[in-house]
Image (cartoon, rainbow, N blue to C red; front, side, top):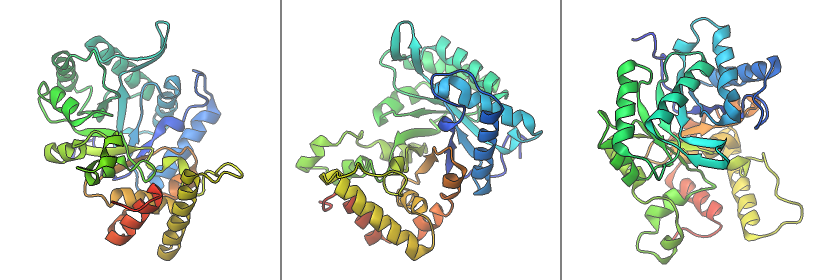
Length: 327
């Protein structure tokens, strides 16, 4: 086994967007590094060895504090699988945000990531968002150079449709390794895009139809960002006082069902919510984003829930979250 490869690759991924201090500040100190170290240790304590970044998280300080933690411990880098993302520019050139997947931008952004993470390679580079000005041949050539140099070990995408993946893959030497998408019990349109084929409600579903099937066919891992839906079903968020709209009632009913399932299994609501997602045959890898060690550890056992969850239980959670029956 290469010294660059962690001993295992966990199904869960730890998302580092909550590390590095406040958004909009490029400054951090020992407290932020210690906080990052505690989060990383909590993730590793439940078997997570994969860590997700993006060059825009906390203005780059998420990667910087992570790099500080790596520098503290000799040999730690070789035990971790690290991925990061490029393609979004924030607060540059007089714009709030725009996308840039030009060859020059990809290279310069990767170089910045490596410097902040204090490493000489990424296990996986993801293209963060589709860029309308993306030239697949130009991107393919840039990626090939990075792969040949060993700067990155694999390439994937985030928030791409099947058609966008294929257009890019035609210019790459190997299949795309992953696609990271918003998938959760609170955002079940990835399920509805299949269920509602030839159904009037299907017209309102925004998830790009066929994307999960394309990933399965090509071997791209499906990663889920925001898999806990912001804590809507785990008791981590509280509906507004006096609110009684249909969405709030559905969330409360779903949270109650999640709690009962967790109690029956002797596990946590987080494990149930993640287990529901992981029960799907796409073998979804959730990217959990909490910066609180206690909540990170609460995600342990999600795979056990996925393996034990019955088909009726899975559909019961889907129906509760939708606030109506499954058609």
